[in-house]
Length: 163
Image 1 (cartoon, helix red, strand yellow):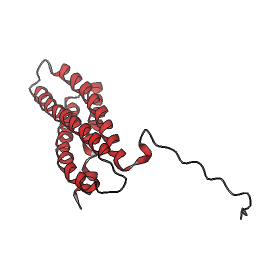
Image 2 (cartoon, rainbow, N blue to C red; image 1 turned 90 degrees about the vertical axis):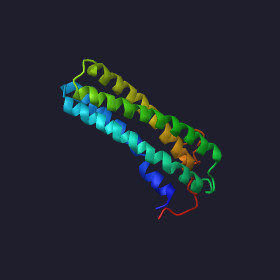
Image 3 (tube, helix red, strand yellow; image 1 turned 120 degrees about the horizontal axis):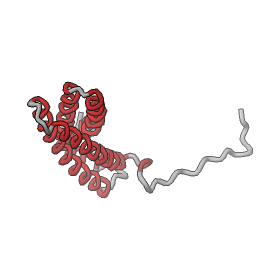
Image 4 (cartoon, rainbow, N blue to C red; image 1 turned 60 degrees about the horizontal axis):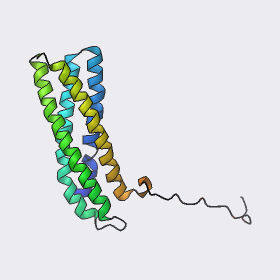
């Protein structure tokens, strides 16, 4: 497994973990379950840690991918900038989740406000995760680029037999 392959394996995790954690956090808020909310905090923290793996493997993946025909530096740079911002946001989310976990365990009075704040921030992080995933996909998947030109449908020759 080379670095590009490893990057493809781990780069989805920092996007998926916050989505799962948001669903769990909403469930915990609805059912007023501290255990469920703490589980969401742990998943946010794990998602933050997976962002480290995605970022560290990105440089090696770039070295491999930039030599592939059809890949331009422009798409790689857009993805790199997006990934840097997304990673910073996931690290902040992980830190806030540590604070939220501590506040929940210590039953601090501001815990409920913190839970809502973390949930809202997580939604922002998910948006930037979507942007990062899209810019990464655009490097090799021309069909998802905004300037993609759909090929004209192939017309069947009238003289060909249908059987």
